[in-house]
Length: 483
Image 1 (tube, rainbow, N blue to C red):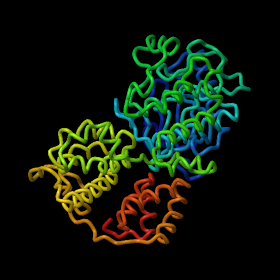
Image 2 (image 1 turned 180 degrees about the horizontal axis):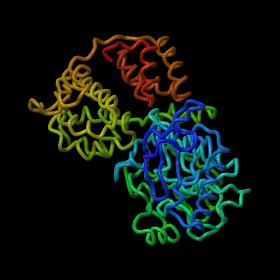
Image 3 (image 1 turned 90 degrees about the horizontal axis):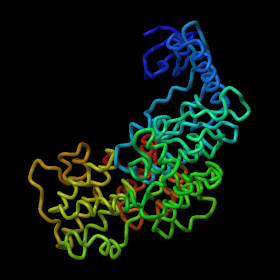
Image 4 (image 1 turned 90 degrees about the vertical axis):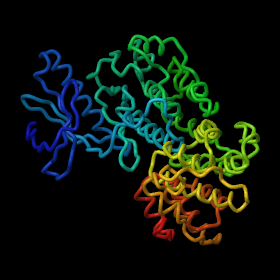
């Protein structure tokens, strides 16, 4: 590994590609960590070098004009005898492609937050004449705080620039627009198409077009993908028309830009929300739905009709609506689908916990869900219904023995502590400052679900994605250390 490149001290290798290496480096003049993206000139002929260096300069020009929280910032461009390099913002995070598990949908609040960041960044770039042309999960970096940063404008086309030839077909086949395959002129609506594919994959866990490059090309040019509700019935149909328009074959049939796509996405998400309080949000509150729009439980009667609860054992009939409500707060609308899949297997509430906990991605979420199940068990015991068979010692249960962090929170729940509406209003102000006006809706729902202050705070904290902000919120709101 080289030790120096230009003024930059090379600290480590972040990744290697076909054209060069990306290094973690240090700028001693400004004293900041950067990522250095390089092209090794000796790997290419003189003619190839000229084309690649031009494209590399184009990346520096394109991204260097963009200053937005959802776009990786480019600081500098340089060359020496062996390499050309771009110095850019070092992002402490991972590519979205590493977070997308095959056939595993992403929970709706996270989808809305990530897509909101992506579309805001694209709208900003398009307004400045820059089209990305390679929007795909690998080019979307997720920071530790859960923010999306769009990277690699290396094949972006500046509308006023001649560095990248109009009509050149560049991109990644599974995410390319039809006009890219046809070699037509490209504008921001091509990025809208690619963003639609990313959204489809987030919602369903699968890409709408797949196969070899030639098969994907034929599908994108000639075939309509299955609506997301067909790929995953639990989603419902609220996103079908949205994605059909985003991925329309002709650019003029799509959303005219990323902002319009984002607004339509929020509208579709609101239409999937069953809570009347959420649908009555003032128009000024619309953009606040993206960071943490929780999924609401089905009413007991509706759930019974859709999942056959009426034919189940008494503890299931009584518990499953509340279990779904608690699970939906952690994984979104997939909760109903998952619960229907595993409920028949559950011998008791402990066993149901064992089946559901692995599907909750975060430790905090698992702990909150475990606390909710512990409260449900108390209700079942108090009503005389009981909670079914108890799992044998050593197996995962509501005691949290097999789930790190659950034991103290679940087996020894804190003593109930009541709160009044004045406290709830003050807490709502704190939550609104973090997640926006939707926070007041979240508070109203939580007040209906519990009268215990600590449980109330945990319900609210579950809607805060950033761990640091979640911790500060709990401390400011007076959560006990045991929570």
